[in-house]
Amino acid sequence: MRIEPRKIETTAICPKCHSYTAMRLSNDPHYSFQCIVCNKTYNTAEIKETYMGVFEISVPAGDNFYDSHETSLEEIRSKYDCTYMASVERIEKSIKKYRVEYAWKDGFPESRKLQQMYEDLKAIK
Ligand SMILES: [Zn+2]
Image (cartoon, rainbow, N blue to C red; front, side, top):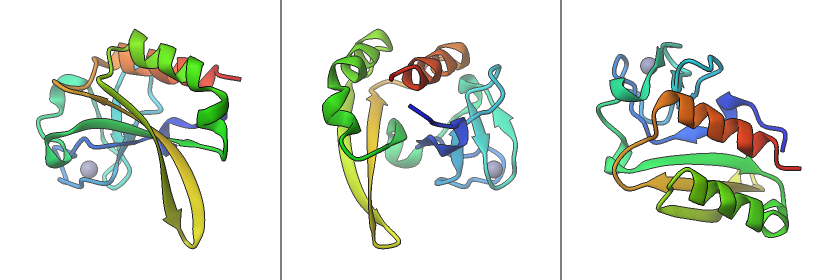
């Protein structure tokens, strides 16, 4: 799967600029999150607020990706103790886009674990 950390959306709210649609996975493997508005990076412990109180990441995926890789995606869900996994469709600029969403009930995993999850997602062929 060809994905960059900055394409992975999260529900974390930036502690500095309070943007709630701008927190992506960090390019820096030592941090969980990076704000695309103010560019600051954060560890999981520094995130105090999330959009609607939900802990979720949203990974861009191609057409058919979910259906053809459901077993691998489910293994990742289980390995990282996600309480929820789903395939979602949304329209962006009149084009149908697909995403895989993972969520946790009680909080995001710590930075190293979240970065490892990204590596596991990236490794799906
Ligand atoms: Zn920010």
